[in-house]
Image (cartoon, rainbow, N blue to C red; front, side, top):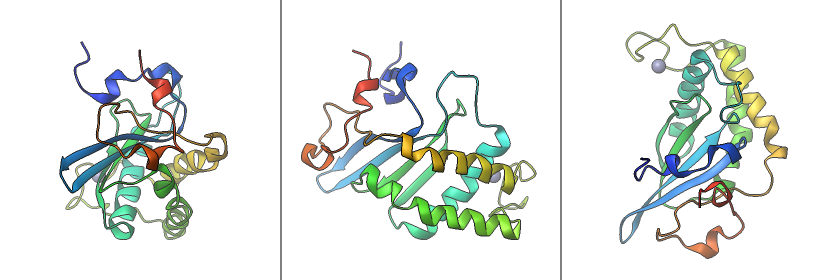
Length: 180
Ligand SMILES: [Zn+2]
């Protein structure tokens, strides 16, 4: 019983760290929401993000995308502690997302230098002591520098969705991680 939750229909044994196009959801004729899977860790390999890392990455990356990407709708962690979902309004590609990363890494380094985590206050966060800029940056940076190993492309999962296939043709994948 996995229902229609897309991520439950992926073969997680084949997933490696990387950025995946998870879904392009058509809301109506002109509106789409694109969901990306930012997979920091190989699933079920005994190496997971810690709660502090997850929480810090959530604060930093969510803030960054809010400030730099007008289409950002949501960024938040997966319950399995191996990655995050990024939701953007309109259609976007994996390349679009990765193009933000150098600037995001600079943003991280600025925060490390200043020893700041955005919204680290009891007013703005539900567990504000569970944040550590250095630990978060270390986990982010390990993911960021591993990008050379990601391979060319990771893509779409939804076979029956209304994707513009040509736009996404340079990105295969997730497909290989689908159960058949
Ligand atoms: Zn928080």
